[in-house]
Image (cartoon, rainbow, N blue to C red; front, side, top):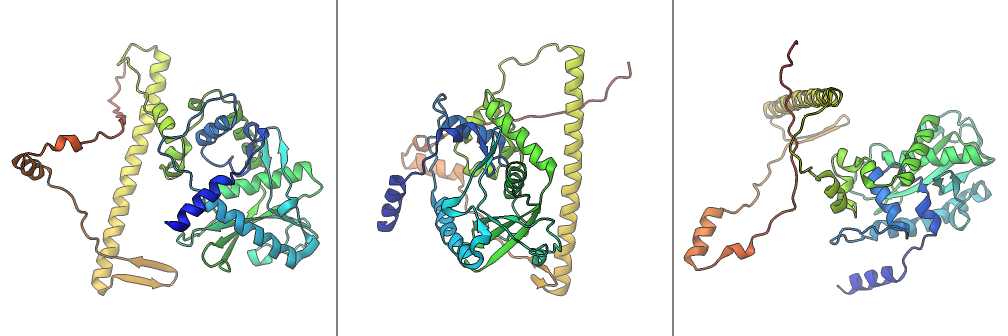
Amino acid sequence: MVSKLAMDTYAASRPKKFGKKRALVVGASEVGRCMRQIGYLKKSEDTRFEVETDKDYVNSYGAITRGNVFETHWVKAMKHQYGDNFIMAGSKQRSWTVGVLSGTPDGIMINQKRDALKHLGVKNIKSDCFVIDCKTIDPRINLKEAKPEHVFQIQVQLGLLRELSEYKPVYGVLSYHNASFVDDIVEFLVLFAPSVYAEAKVRAAKIIHSESAAELLPEGWIAGGKECDYCRFQQACSGIRGNVPATETKKLDPQTLEHFIQLAMEYEGYDDTISGLEAKKRELQHNIKTQLQEHGLRKIDDGGIKIVWSPVVGRTSWDMPKLRAAAQAAGLDIQQFETVGDATNRLTVTVLPRSNK
C-alpha cells in the first residue's frame, strides 16, 4: 500500500531516543505492568546485557504515535483554556525520580478551588492542585473504569510530586479521549493512596535489581495472557515457564515435601472453587436464555443493561481422514505441508487422602 509504505518508512526514520538513565529506572507508566515484561525491557535497554526480542515480533507504532500526536493538541487546548494554571506540560514536562522509580506527569492544574472536581463527585480536593493525564483509547473499547496500570501511573505521579515538589496534590484525573471522536471524553478520579505508592517503589526496585527474568513474576500470563499478546518477549518468557526439569522424581526432605503438599491442597481448593463458580455461571446463563425464550426476545437494551443472544455460525474445519485419503489417491504427499506447533507443558495436581499416622 502506498500510504502504508510511507508511514512505516517515516516512523522508522524517526525513532524515539531515550537516555541511558531510562534503563536504570522504572517509569510510572511501566511499574504497574507485568514485572517480567518490564524486567526484560529494562535489560534490553541496558547495553551491558544481550536481550533479544521475539524474531516474529512486529513493533506497532500506531497507538504510541496516535497518543503523541493527540497530546500535542491536547496541551494546546488545555493552555488555551486554563493558561498559566496548567503547568509542566508539553515541552515543559518534568520528570521526577526517587530511587529507581520515576514519573513524568502530562500536566498539573494549579490555583484550583476546592470544588474543582465536583463534576467527578468530589466536593473538596483537599489541595489547590491536581494531576491530569491524557490518554487516547480505541473507540471499540467499552471503558467502564480506568485501566489498573493507568491508575498505578497516576498514583506514582501523585506520590513523586508530594515527596519532591512544592505541589501536594491529593487527586489525579485520568482523561480518556476517543481516538475516532476526540470530543467523546471520559474522566476518572484517582485518590492518592500512600500504600500504592510504597508498593510501586518496591516493585521498581525488584525489577531493576533482579539478576534474571526468572526472579520476576510473569504477571501478564498469570492474569490470563491478554498483556502477553503485545509483548515482545513471549518466546523468552515461555522458555522459562516451560523449562521442565530433566529429573523425574526424588526423595524430598519432610519440610520441602510438606510445603509441596500445602501448595497442592491450595491449588486443588481453587480448582474446586472455580469449577463451582463456572457451574453457577452456566446455570445463570441457562436461566437468562430461558427467560428470553419465554418473552420471545433475543435482545434487551434498557434500564442500564444490555443482553444480546445471537446465533453463531459454526467454524469451518477440515475432515483430515478424508483429506489424506483424497491426497493419497491423487498421489500427493501432504506430510510436506505439516507443521509442529511450539512446545508447551502441562501441570497436573492430585491430592490424595492423607494418613493419620
